[in-house]
Image (tube, rainbow, N blue to C red; front, side, top):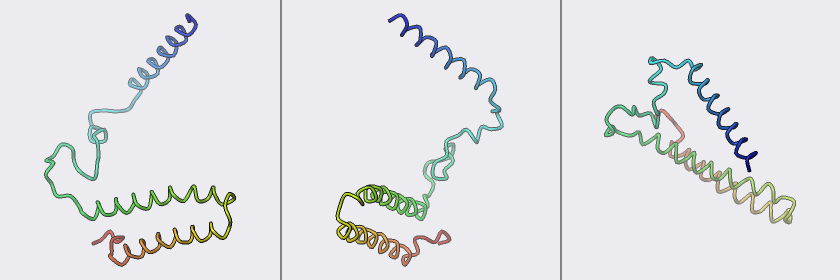
Length: 117
């Protein structure tokens, strides 16, 4: 038990020394204040919160999230390739890709992928 406590104390001392050294050796200055401020969705956190939000930015974000989830659904499909029948796996995966391609085609027709609108 004493060994465990002494190891814990040593680890805490090492971590505190490393944090102290990083604070001393960092090259931050008062001029870098803007770099240290939080940046979310292109808004300045020090200004008014009632400025108009870009709807196109929101739509691109939603498209990214949708396709990101779809990519996460593709990984189990790859791992189950050897576990199931090849014909049924091909039907299911081609149907899944067809749905993705139809969604991408629809977004392309609606000009949601053009950033200049």
